[in-house]
Length: 428
Image (cartoon, rainbow, N blue to C red):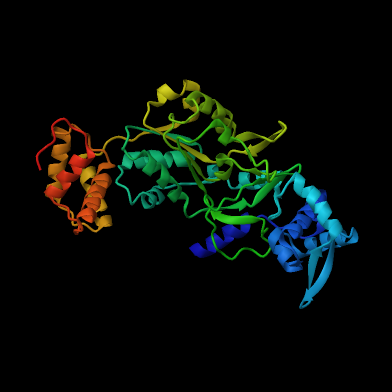
């Protein structure tokens, strides 16, 4: 039943491929140039290979081939069975070189900006319904209280944005990166590239978009890839320039910025407030997109294009949000979740899970003593990151000593001494 539902959703959401030259008549010249550049870059191709690279239907490729051959830009050089093998001519090579000087893009045919906008709007995160069961499944690997889980689920249902704030080591980044797991049962169509007035913007990024291998409807457009809802994480390296189109002066086409790649998914801005750009400048850049669900990107020459901003934005910071943003901006981020320190019960459970994952036997008494040492001697709170970090210290020490790692009092206190800074270290 669930499989049938997924198949129905896949079929209903799939962009339909253009079948005839009439379907792309307003972009015919662009596709002719693209096919000739592909031939220029690849060498002789069969008609099937030509269609596979361009992601255009056989009828469209055949019609464009006829036009290119009429202009003596390409020719048939043989047959593979009953399929023609095509090569570029000398005249075609000269023409292709002219077009390559304008743009070296020679991959899958881009979809139009209008089609991209329409598909992204159909796949908006605002249409998602998130329920407690899905939240519990997505966060089952973490120790998190029900109140925080409810707030996170509420934020996801808004389809908007969220501020995760709290002290360092409290697990904000881990929580932020778990949010896309809630959307794991859903999927979207992502284009290889988008074209606007001859300008090509590559969108599909294999580092961001995880392709789902399923049988597609027969009329699905191969210029689109069926993927999990994307997750993009940016941190302290973020600059204001990275939020605009990335033009390559050599290839003469663009790469989409992070927020465009994250459309229909999640964008995580980690360590917000510690970027190389001032927080207020970054926030001003987000005001219109967060409020109106569209963004303006700038092409070389100054022309701006409007693209959807259909994504869930997570700002994770260990700074006070009221010190980073004014009231007008905080109003647009309607969910703020404070992520604090672990309770003793949570700390012990995190420690137990880290031990299981590391293949160590868990000793509750040793961990209870550690918590007392942390709070009374090191004057440290119970940060959720400490179990992982201390177990790592134990594993590294055992590797150095060529011994089997073991969780006992001596190993744990030695790990604490290596990890923490204190004027009066406890005895081993």
